[in-house]
Amino acid sequence: MAAHREHRSGVIHHLRVASFGLAIALAVGGLSSAQAQTAGGARTALRVAYIPVIPWLTAWIAKDRGFFEQHGLDVSLTLIQNISLLPPTMGRQFDIAASTPPDLLKASLSSLDVVAVSGNTVEPTANQSMQLIVRADSGIKGPKDLVGKLVAAPTIGAVMHAATLYWLKTNGVDPNSIRAIEVPFPNMGDQLKAGRVDAIEILHPFVGQLLAAGNVTIGNPMLSVADPGLFTFWIAQGAWARANPAVIAQWTAALNDAKHFVETNPTEARTILGKYTKLPDAVTQKIPFPAYDISIAPGQLDVWVKVLREIGQLAGPVDVSRLVVSAK
Image (cartoon, rainbow, N blue to C red; front, top):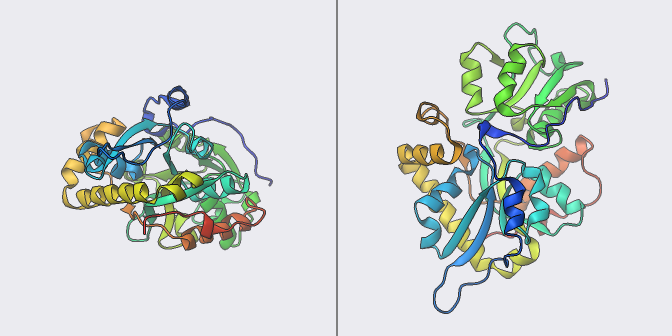
């Protein structure tokens, strides 16, 4: 059965957090892009867009604990709900923003000069963020049982759904044999319980809650891409990144400090998590930290080029060596 979209939500309403949206970004769009530090030692201003979910915790920690300032940066953070809208804003409304492999690769084919400047999270077997969850009584045990079924995705065409389609294909299932519907993460559990969808692509903290309620996982499609596989990272305008290697090095150093803080101060890190996600302490204390990796290499994107080509979402040549401008 040909895949089709049953519903279009327009945004990924993660964790029921109110978003200032792109209106805020546009309001500051007249500001100049980040400049190199002045002779007087002024910090470099960076306008950064993030998504209010745990993968982006290191940026919040770097802001709150002063790591950005220590490395000569004056970072302003703006909350955005739809990550797919961010590549065209690079060098205009924002200097650095959250992203994923499909968003960057598709932007490059649209002639946007956007590059990855630092890593953020990877998905390994030992520390999984994503699961494909079904009801225990659904009769769905694996990919072949999804033929003709309705799968809820946070965004059709984005990283998690692309991984699901590739997972199906690598298991001998035609990706076009399933149907997809966009559902915000907080609503997925109710839709699954009511039988309105057959399976859901879900992340923590919802994974733990859904499994505790008696649902079951049939696998993690992200691991079909690579193990560990590149999941999230930070992007910037290519021309700006190539002209500002020192700023990228400062940015990367601050995030590495934040990564170390997560590893050595988990309780305080969870307090900052609650501040930015508005989740209650009882929830933040149980969410597993994802696998943070601030490094990034072209080979990690090349894997995703293969994935997107296999599922028919990428046409045309892509030179991944030109899509990474990271700290040396």
